[in-house]
Image (tube, rainbow, N blue to C red):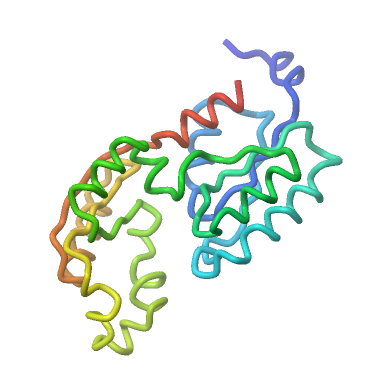
Length: 204
């Protein structure tokens, strides 16, 4: 059993996270009693403009350095084309493995198999399923211009829902999202995947 002295003896750690992972990280933090770990999130909407992620992460790191002994970035590459890794190398900070959240939730081998089996796959996580209308339909303007659907999704054949928690309501929403996009539906329960593995290693 962890004691108060154990917590006090640990180095204070900051996780700088994508807002799309906030719910999952806080759940892991509470479940594991990581009282020495703090979480600061950047807007999930940065995924629509990934060029903003590297500078925003750098700013967070530099502001946090006086207050934290360890800093970890809960982002994958997330469409930055290696620019985030350049920032993290210069700041000597590590991040989550992989190219995107789909890969670290599913695991690299499972995701590679999914991609090889059907390259034309659109992926949803719990976060994207909860916010599908706002981030996908509204974000791409499909709620106003449904005629654009073939332009965005004409080359897709399948929607794979990678679920972090077992929730029948989310499962129904993901299935409905596939129907709205005209895609075959598949569900894979991943749990927290490599997100949990990485954070447990960090917090131990």
